[in-house]
Length: 447
View 1 (cartoon, rainbow, N blue to C red):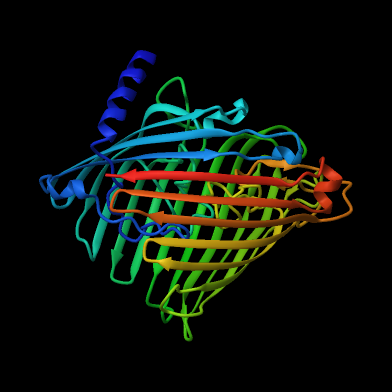
View 2 (cartoon, rainbow, N blue to C red; view 1 turned 90 degrees about the horizontal axis):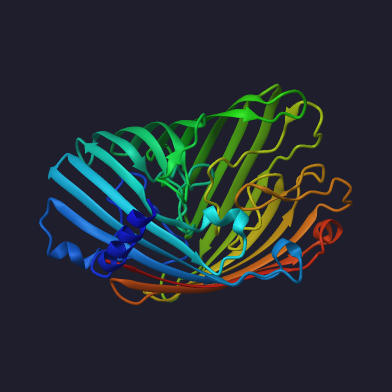
């Protein structure tokens, strides 16, 4: 396998200098970044036949986090790079065959325990067949390994910030017409395996029903959903490990208001059996934005509130920690990825400006509290990073972020930013209490 991977990596590195690009269109599921400007269409498509699309991406990012684990002496400067090669064949208008190979590597990365999150030599990242009956109304069927983003990606996402970026082995059926789309999904998340081809996790499955109703609310989009996740050998608070069935019912609404105001909200309730325990959790997000001027630098102010329940008693047989599942919360909960959508209360104020068409600048400030000190602090990955049930303060700290992204031309873009977590009383009582700083520089080319 290693000779094969090395040879394939060499082909990808040569091929990526001539090809790169985005995965094919997904009606109703297009991603929008609040930080980077939109990327123009690949120039390579201008010389290829209509039934064939070849593209890819090269990306590099230098990270230099300091204060890891809120330890003043812990740092880990490293460089991550990613190469993707995309091929899509469209023999007839309704049918598409798509494959994407990816080579992700990390250089100088010191945290070996979580290397799978940044390092995965040549592998098949996506591979599916897609049937689309009509662009405006009809049915879409997609079978195979694929990206997935539901709503704003707070529960199910394929975050592009990650150097490997999660995918799913899934079957997806979409029924749609103007203003209405309903997705039915059955699948499983793919696990990164550096020694062989990636496979989905045995015994873990995701089922979803997600609707998008764009005509019920004036200038808004109402999105009700129901998710179910099953897993094996879940550890309860009391008793033996057993099967877990997590059900999540939620509602998302976003839209525009008069006077250049925009809004978004999402509320989700979770229940079900966690082995011998009972799940009872809730999470929510509420956002209001105002574009001060529609021209010039287009300054936009925003105010966001996030909350997610925690487990106030670790031995009562009720699991109260909200589960963010397969979230992609980078940016929405801070660029440092120190906070997850679990056991938390967060308030964020933000400012975005567009100095020119190709540039976007964002600044954010957050205040972070725990919902209960009897549960811990969870990182952006969803894993618990700090636990101190004897802490007297719920104030985790503050985070200040600033990012600048620039689109040079049809191919190349770059971004730079820094985020800093200022440790609050909870971190001072529960760790060495150091601030955490995360600067980065990234560049990418899409061909």
